[in-house]
Length: 396
Ligand SMILES: O=C(O)/C=C/C(=O)CC(=O)CC(=O)O
Ligand SMILES: [Ca+2]
Ligand SMILES: [Mg+2]
Image 1 (tube, rainbow, N blue to C red):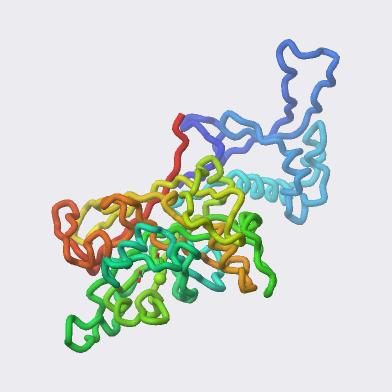
Image 2 (tube, helix red, strand yellow; image 1 turned 90 degrees about the horizontal axis):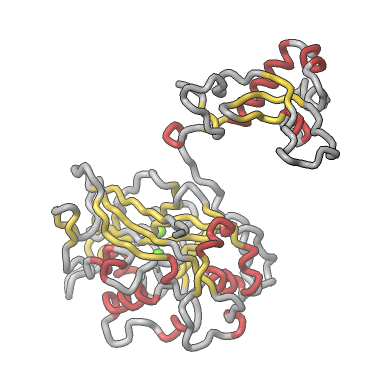
């Protein structure tokens, strides 16, 4: 297998990553440039594809960190003589460092692991559409959204130990299931295993115990976002969750994506967050009330199917409570967040029936069937693979 560089190397190039020949170069004076300008100094470089790697820049940046080259001036020279005088051990060290600096590893040749040690995991409940649908299903259509919901971002404390990286098998949990009408609760493997389409904040700098984070400074405490699946056993959840909230129905596994997308990368996709009525209390009223326009999709690939089928298309922008409001609310009582804490957004459902963020809503608690490339499906079956995607793109 050939080595691969992030520098594009044409297939027929004489200068792939395996070659790396040395020379002395200087940048050409710009055509029509001022002739009185000093000519750039000659310096050592190696050829890679159609480019030259400037070894004096690499050396000045301290990137030659091996024992022989770390304190050497051999690359800040107008010729290679000093480097040549150092002999083969230095040449080998230089080659290894340069190959490492220029290398790329194929994603399909690596295994990703959890990117952070998650100290604490909290899950919010911030899509109004999801809150309304769950409320209708679990509590009836009279007052589906609790009155506190419009005043504060509701959340529960999740389980950090069972947060796993995407690709990890999820074992169907057993537990007590909600009794049907007047019968007793049953025990056994969950019959209503579900996904929840979420994203989650990875906390950067935390706060000291007793010192809340101001909502207008919350942005500085957020490193980036991951995709998150808050797997949920609906039959266990429906029976256990009154009055303290979700427990064993969700703590058996929560999956996050291995790549954390930074808020800097998401900046071009910032958009207005939904208008909030009633106006939130001042500690939640933010100067910039922003969301991000991140199209999200969920696909399911049943074990015996060759292809995955799309089951929903939603968008991060549907969140009523923003991630900065969630973070400010989380700390308003003085609770301290720590670097690497995980804050789930809550299931991201949109307004349309094709944009609902979990099977509980999509099948209306198993009353309706979905069609996965022609096969009927309610909740998750053994062997199903659930695939989340989130991808924003500038339209030119
Ligand atoms: O409304 C309920 O009783 C329950 C809702 C959920 O299960 C959702 C939850 O975990 C929070 C969320 O993902 O929005
Ligand atoms: Ca959830
Ligand atoms: Mg979970």
